[in-house]
Length: 298
Ligand code: C5P
Image (cartoon, rainbow, N blue to C red):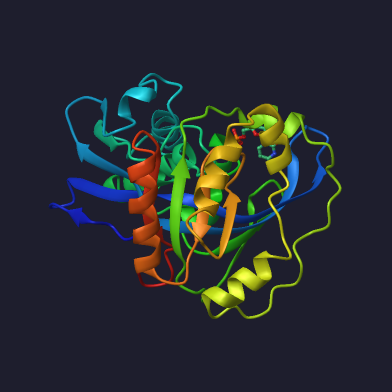
């Protein structure tokens, strides 16, 4: 998770809830409860939703931003689920809170918007309420909210195994210039998992030290996103996003999570910015953003 942006006499905390990018996602098995076993190399983007929590006389929740109107603001919202779950564990400290979410990430789009919002809510409220939860306890609460929430609590390059909760943080990782693009298709993650043809793929190959964009792209060429063919079968329009990114001459193009957001990797931030500007011009109604991966310290 990126650092707290501000704290005003500890009455307000604001956080960025970054986009989660599955650079590689291998489906290696399925548990008896139906959840899939994964092996995924994950980074977080320097771009995301903005969450603010503030002491108040009564609970409230507001959303704004380009995707703020696309989400319910009732109890099904992961932000409120996270607030309520934390409150159940720590009822004494959990005073009323006003929460504001500025939604910049498209909904249900494979970049963990909801999971990252939930993780940011847990982080911000533990700070506001002065809760000293162990990271493992926060991860446990996070996992109740969604398989990707524990990894979003880290917000740093990592490998996630199990159903996503078994996390190995990668100490150092190269700065990856990227473009994220989504043409607005709506994709159901459970449907994508249900449509998989294979669930017994090999795990990610052993990872050598990766110290440049080139190293990462060479490694990623040996990996895959095993959800892609199922997503493409259910939603052929995902191919348009892949093609449009491919046309910007990147090092690599791939879908994140179950889609529909796809990412492209470039050698430099300026190439990513040029590619995003070109793509935005030809597809003004798409979600397109130039960004880069968050690495330790930036
Ligand atoms: O945990 P979360 O609610 O984010 O997952 C959404 C859906 O994605 C699950 O209900 C399940 O169908 C599928 N899923 C899965 N295996 C995972 C993660 C998610 O089958 N490891």
